[in-house]
Length: 114
Length: 114
Image (cartoon, rainbow over all chains, first blue to last red; front, side, top):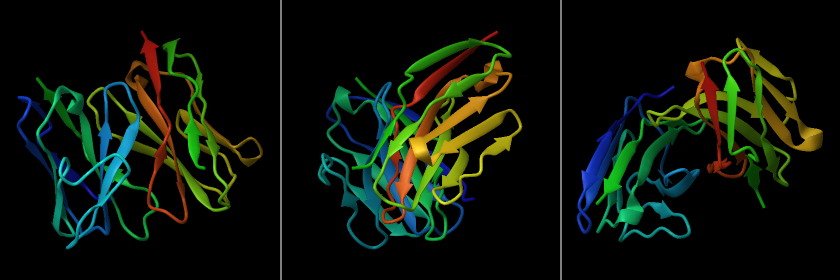
C-alpha cells in the first residue's frame, strides 16, 4: 500500500492565521481525501482532492475556509484559513486507487489554535 | 441512509482479558465494504481489516478476530488476551460500491490496564 508523509505533524497557531498541511505519497494515487477529527469525535470528510481541478467539498465545508490544491497524483495540500479555536482538530490525508477498496491514512496533523 | 453505530464509547479491561467491540451498520446497497481501523494515541489510523459484503467468512489474525453477520448487520471485532499496546480508539467504517466515501462510526476507546 501507499506510504504517506504528512507535514507538519502538529502545530500551535494563533487565531486569525492560516496553516497549510502537506500530504506527499510515494506512488501515484487516484483518490486523495482530507478528513477532520475534532477532539473526541469521529472522522468527517472535508473534501476530495481532484488532480488538476477544484476539490469536491462535503456539506458544511467551503473552499474559502479550506482551500485544497492537488497539482499532481502524488501531492496535495489543505489550508485551514482564518483559524479559530474551533478549528483545533486532527487533520488527516487519505489516499486510494481505483482498484483499491481500502484507503491508507497519513499520520495526521494535530492542530491547536490559541 | 448509510450509518455506522458503535454503541460502546469506552471499554476498560484488564490485561489478558478478551474484549469485543461492536459495530452495527445500515445500508441499502447489496455491495459494500466494512473496515476496522485502530487509532493509537499518536493519532494515525492503522488499517486492520476489510470485509466485502459478499464474503461472510469470519477472519482471524493472531489475537484479532472479526465476526461478520449480515443477518444482524453487524461486524464485531474481538481481541483475545488483550495487551496494554491494544489501548487505542477503534473505528468501524462502511463504504458502498457506488461511492468512494467512508462512513465512520464514532469509535470505541479501549483501555487495557496492566
